[in-house]
Length: 305
Image: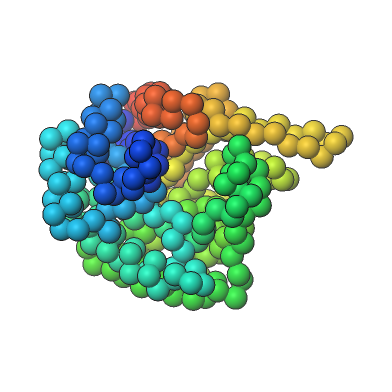
């Protein structure tokens, strides 16, 4: 188990998939990547998660991948995990391609010294989500229940590959997918039934939704025993029973609806020993992420003393 000081708390790279001039970030000069990585290091991060909505590591050519690795050495940053976003392995059009991409991600995650590859079954944002102030205000893709067993089979295939290289697969909780509720996530985890698979207890993805929601404490209590990698973020959530209205907005970990001081301490009691990836939408997402990392570190120091 890590010490509080050495516990991996990774930054999420939320610059997006394009540069300021609209070119794909994957094709940008290495100097663009370097400037972004330096900002991460300057805020005290020692590791990050190069999620595929930034630079898709699995799709880089050998020469560009070499540039990427060189920047890690230069900036002193490491990769603790790689998350795959809207690339479901049972996507009706691109499932096979997505499966191959995740296999390539596993190979490069191993080469980079990461311990986890995070996958989910979410797909591209629908047009209404792209127009909304916050994409979660609109309904999006919903998994087809008929695809569940195929999704589990392909997850086992990925887990076999990951396990052979000393990695683990983490299943991201996300609404209306096979891991869309605490109960669904546990059911899918048990259906996969593989020692190299765990759950990403990203309850933040759920409490932001404008729909009825179980108490967050109840959801965490169910999934934390199976957690192995954690995308962690917080929101203000308000409900008005008289009108049936909901409100949510992203805020730093310390100020939102979820009491993460209590939840992280409970996770440790239940045996959690995986990394965190701090995530925030809007405002100065990187600055908020650094504050969140400091907050988590303080909780760890208190809980582990």
